[in-house]
Image (tube, rainbow, N blue to C red; front, side, top):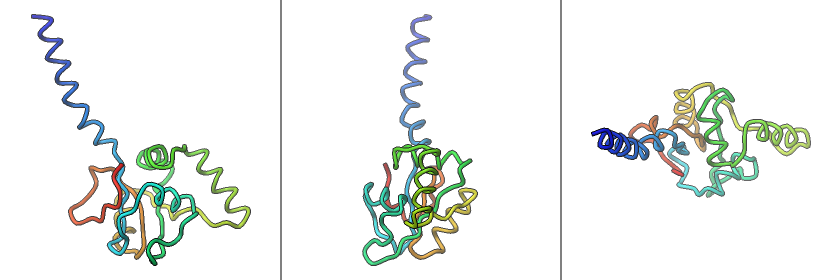
Length: 139
């Protein structure tokens, strides 16, 4: 009987894995005038190397450093961490190569900024995606 309990518990845990992973997924969202983009383009936009996509000037938005979504975005999409990202933008700004993306304090502010700002691109947890949102990339 004990072995059956452990087998059942293991199966429940395995069934939860896809759901738990989806909860950690970050999606890139954009204003309706921005088309779907690939990972390389997302990386170039958030690193200040691309400012236009298909003739549309893009305006990237980051969550505040304290937001978990920002940490996940940096890790999943840019393969970096907060310290490296801040250092990158400190140098880039110092040498006159641009300014870091616009920063928002919370998810609701990100959604509002992206929906109302032409060319805006941001990111949210997949669970926060609302019907009708322009999802540019899911990784």
